[in-house]
Length: 420
Image (cartoon, rainbow, N blue to C red; front, side, top):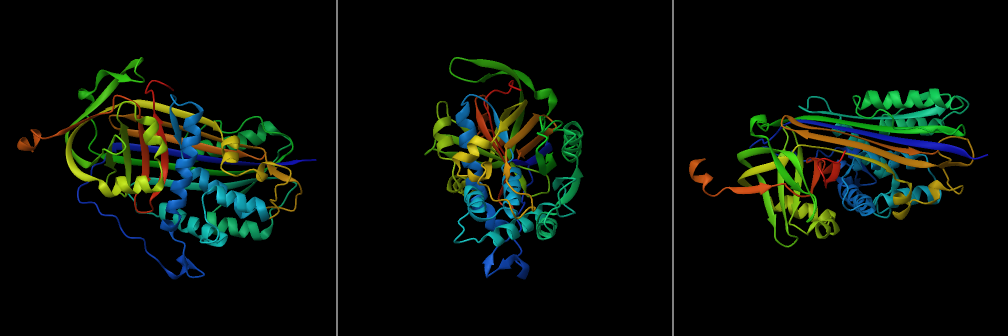
């Protein structure tokens, strides 16, 4: 009999009031003795390039499925959940997962990766920050199974994971238990992450991420007016367009790729939203160039500029089965009967049957509110004369970043602001 493992990942983003802090600085990463294993740096920044590479690789595959459709997901939730799964994997299955996450195992051994996620989790969850950023991980285990003690201890220490009992023979009750947990941790944004559980399911791994922050300068609702958004050359829709006049923000005009980059930082925090507006007909070119080096070049090239910004109010969502796209990234054996997840429990023939991800993002005058859930079912006056006008009236990209850890919390494309 095949035993199914389900891994559910949930992420929620809620950002409120456009934050444009001046003179904000990014604190350097503090490196302590525990941040090093075998003399290799494993703090949050050590994960940044691999996590960014994975985020853009996954984005390209999702966007390719339907080029004119909105895309929104939380790369951090997906990568953290898969890394958590790798904690209980062994042999080729573990290697495939970690390499699929874009880690070079010669340069960064497996133990260092988990320690890096531990430090990232601690940093993101630290108290005293002016924003809410909660990351929660849980293991729902069938009543007839026990986690291996080593995995239980490592899960608690590295990922602060909870172990909860569930009766998977009563699939309705099990689904309710899991969905209630996800709904609670995502502040009601993700209500039904899992459905159709199989009675052979024996374990569900869940990761939830919630983000809420305030913008420093909100858009004035009285300046919001109906305006055209050009979904394509032949199609336009009328949307409520928000306006912010003469705001000073980090800005870069990328002539090489044909796009404009605007950064909107959040109030008194290191989080920011990076908005990328490709020139007409350049979306595919910009998407193809999405690489860690491109993001770094954009960030390094940003300069303060006074602009007038027009941005549509929008609500976008995504609901994905990630099994096939993850297979394209090299994660194959974990979905087969050859999977080796023997580090989780003594149960045999354990494999992942499904990976699902749900996300939603709402942007309005007072701010942004977004949520995502992923699941792997394993189962001045003179200056005014020189202002720059940036009009997001055609498809654009949005990247929500934790600047000090260089982590992409949310990544998406607004192809049609009216598309749910």
